[in-house]
Amino acid sequence: MREKMSNERLDLIEKGLSSKNIEEYEIYLVEKNIYETIFLKNQADNEREIRDFEYFIRVLSQKKDETGIGVIKGNSLDKGQIDKNIDICATLSKFNSSTKYFFPGKTHISDLNTADKKILDDPIAIKKDLAEELISEASQQKDVKTTFGRFRIHSNHSFLRNSNALNLDSKKTFFFVEFALKAQKNGKLSEFWDVEYYKKKEHLKFNERVNNWARRAKDTLRAEKPKPADNAIVIFTPPVLKEAISPVIGFHALALAHFEKLSRYNIGDKVASDNITLIDNGLLDGGLSSNSWDAEGNPQQKTEVLKNGVFQNRLYNQKYAILDDVLSTGNAKRAESGTVVNGISNLTVLPGDISLEEMISNVKEGYYIEQFSWLHPDETSGNFGAEIRNGYYIKNGEFQNPIKLGNVSGNVLEMVKNCVYISKEREFSENVLFPYMAFNNLNVSS
Image (cartoon, rainbow, N blue to C red; front, side, top):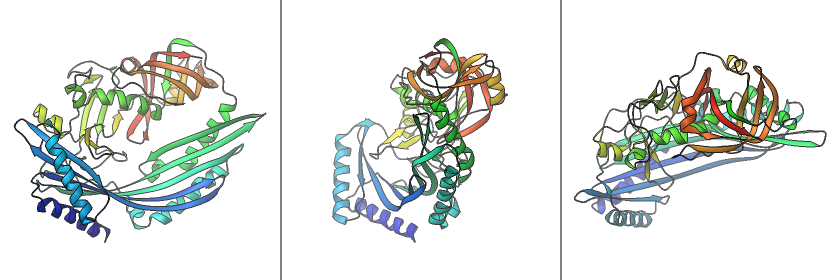
């Protein structure tokens, strides 16, 4: 029923485009359903259900050696408003100029399931069961108390049509968890606050995850500032690596960075340690950004970016594929405004040959970082400096004491050239599947 309604919405917008003789157009429509439970302390405080939709229209105006592209976002199906949006979009396409561009046409699209049927059939019951499991696990923890929590199920249905007879749709379900635990002892107070999206139910692992949150909240009470060290060996967890590697290595792998002369990478360059093989996989089972098609309707795919440290392939959307006379790798992303940009899908690093436990045991003196207060490396230079929120000092292959505050600084582009160990274990963190990785030559200050 809802799918029929969405197609009627698309028909209505397409009819408006045809009535105005718009020859090259694209309609991208997303239905969003959110089912949420909010916790205060150990009780569910509020239940919410949100339904919304939005659409984006892109119109092309072909010029001699350029293409004008108009983009507009809408959420009204009033005919007058649709007509107004189309007129604005068409006008923008006449004034804006970009390199030569055309919409993709029909091609083979992989059959990829990105939605949990049980969630689609009964999202409220699934949410109720999982929210109860989450708060039950938190209530069983000793010496910590829940201060706030939020659990959501997202169910999205996306549609894409264009004037080249492309007509696609896909469904996606995923989870969002925000949770805070407080620990207190001898007048000291600490709070651990976690926020993350999860693609699959089996990624939630509430028993393991809540235990981990509680440990970190309690360990922060006795944490010390890190011992300063130059050329330190530091182990990073998958969530930390996501915030370090994705924005920097991901950026330098993009065709956008190459054409803007910002990328440090040329095909065939040795840019990382031999033990690093990095893949952009838009079809990754369990990846948050997995889909059969990208924001322009090109097939998403698996692209080897680094192999044994050597740069292999750039990541293209339609615009840069046309510029380089190659096929798109399915790396178009949709910005909030509706503009299409070149971006990564899901990044994976192949596992190493030792366990995390063995990795730690091999470190005579070093640091294990679970979380920074922030980590925003400069995507072009790779430079970063970040305050430690949760971590451990390692001495003679064992955790000596928890650490917090202090700083870890370095350069991501150089860091990946100094990878000492990669773990066998890998974990999902939103749109990455990364192992634990240890790097030399980082600086730690107190």
